[in-house]
Length: 327
Image (cartoon, rainbow, N blue to C red; front, side, top):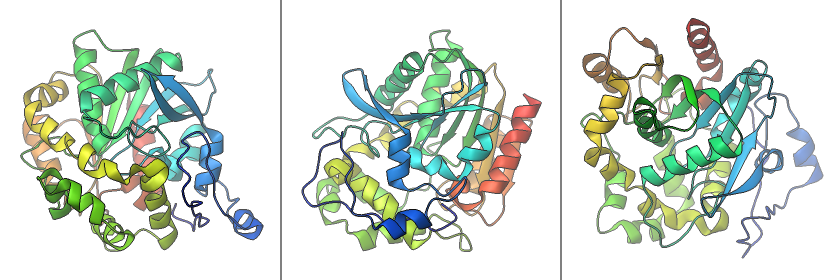
């Protein structure tokens, strides 16, 4: 994503989650056949497949090398597994990678109305682990995915989780509700005005809100923003904004369980964090040191915002591989 991504558009009226339709020129496609981080939405979808998990149609990408140690990657809000493209190839050199679009995100099913919850997303992650036959594996999570990972880790601590975790590494996320500095748009979506705000959200508003959590020197490209917006709208998914934002309430309700999961973990935990993220930046890392541990593997990326894997993929790759070597 650090390079320009081919611009794709949806054909009007298409909502079939099993058929991705885009109007692309041959020239645009050929320009985007890059190496490593240059993977268009169309190419990303072609790499993956749909599985029926817990009676839901879930999209996932599995690099498939069963002879390599595995990493389960869990994306954030409001984006999708496509977020992992910038670091995918480098990690895939030594690891099997498995990533899904959680319910309500990306190419996966987007039921409406639906009471989305972190618990349900965790159940779906465990269903994917079983479907992909993952036994022992590492976990790399970001943002909303951090919260899902905290619930999954709590289950691991209880001896009830699917598979056996080898390590957990977290990118910017609201690990502690008391330090999560929600944006105004998030607060409005969670309020009774949520359905109206969702309806009124435009491409321009979306671009402005998402760009605001990136670092000042690592802003998303126009093509990146177009891709994020298209994935949000895929299969009429924009309705999910106010439905999915309830994870902020989940974090408060389950705060003790999810913070205790980090405190009581028997596996190595790492934290790689963009410091200038206004939502979960340096202030969140300070709280992590106070509440969880100052001795964990912690890397703070100065001048990087909420999406370190997109803004500074090389730094994230270097730090994460260093963490895995220590594990």
